[in-house]
Amino acid sequence: MLVISRKVSESIIIGDNIEIILSEISGDHVKIAINAPKEIPILRKELVETRSLNKEASIAPQKQTLDRLKKVLAGKE
Image (tube, rainbow, N blue to C red; front, side, top):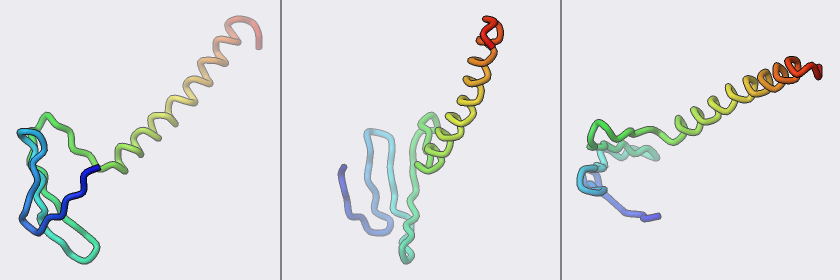
């Protein structure tokens, strides 16, 4: 992991086409601006984690239902 210190309005460049700009510092909050091509998704980590958990939760009941259906069709239940 790379740790870089920046002041307000300073930026870092990632690759050739992504710029991260420190927009504002207020107490324990930092606002950043991200300039990147539209085809590059930019998501907050907690949303990605929540989406992953929701996906897992929605698949588990379906798998259980399919397993039960297979047993019923096989005449084992």
